[in-house]
Image (cartoon, rainbow, N blue to C red; front, side):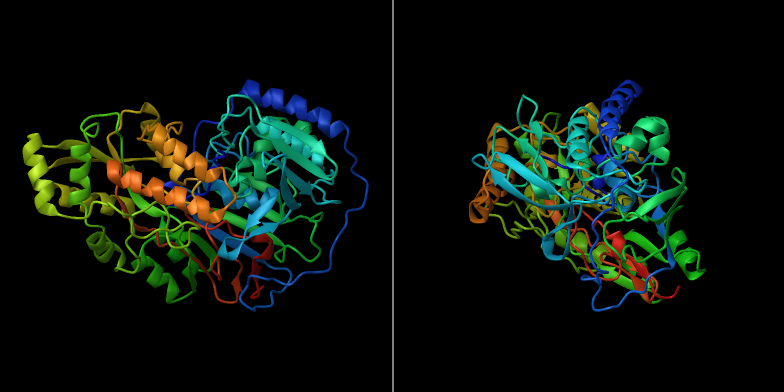
Length: 551
């Protein structure tokens, strides 16, 4: 199973980040790709198309030129250590920057459609165990180096050796076979992976480095001034503060990007972003989760509610007491009233669900047979029978997440439980999961297709460091689901997996994350001013189509 690490949101996708590759691995990678770079030509003209309109901008005709400053919360998207995909320790949180600089082989468009970008298509061969990806001809990196199948194949091979959390993970002991084929690249697995293309979005397989620039600059410098084939190129980068980009003169689509300049700036919090936009210091802000704050933005700017693919999940660690005991896990279900949480904290605007997908997900199932619903009397009876129930509940250091944890604490204490709360910074949150000694956490599970990103496999399979469940039966169901291209068969496997999670009480699901993006009037783009399907928790904005008609 190919598990991409996708983008992320204020509560859960933050755990996508692991420690990046060390200096020895980076040096080896630079040496290997230098050989590829030496074989490339940089002088041939690239093929272009006629200037395209924006197909996802709601009928608006964008003007070419102008600039946009996008504000990012420093607690997540607004903290980036470096922007080489293979050494970027914040992977999924930095998807906007990586997409803008590197482009994507395949983009996720509205309604979950795969959109060809630097690739022109794909096909399954060899009994569906080989995936051929065809590379767009004539594309150049922003420094003029040719973007070729050889560069893609070398990059994919390097991806497999990194410890970055955004690398694809394959459910086999041997290394997948990656080859250059006429017009593209092939990868051969020992099994069928129906989600391979979807899983590339939010994965380093989708962001191809320029081998010549990497060899010339070295890994450390390249992380600050990376070169890609995306719509923008780096002008300057002050990590976790300001990233200044300008239009890539070699971008493959004539007339795109619309903007001449795109700047990302960190802000302390959502309130600071609101004040900055009112003062004209920013034109857009990503990832608003609070409905009350979203309303404030909406009174002055264009506010877009993004289709959710991810529900909140109360994740339990079945390897650590008290949740080795299924009775204790059932008490959590009986004591949790998702409807009340949604009403009190989010205005009751999102549908409560019982599975690992949200309504915009491809395999959404709102009602799950055997799901344990809220019954406070049963929770109290279990706690009494167990002689008490004590545990530590943790989440990310964020106001919205902390409010949810406090509400859950009240619910559980009403049932007689003793609950200690902890909040962690992003780095500490990852470290807590890696210890394997945590007890219960407020997170999310979900992606457009469950086998990808921070989907069900990320939260519930035995091989994931962010899972508290170790069940070969569940692993098999999820592997079977990812191993067929028949949508109806996949739905059956996922339904069975959801029923098994409910039966074993491996973690209650609540309601979808209701995320918003905002932008000033007469500016926008897919994911900013028009809804865009989420890769994982929030959408990957298509920056080549971003525009500012005020400029």
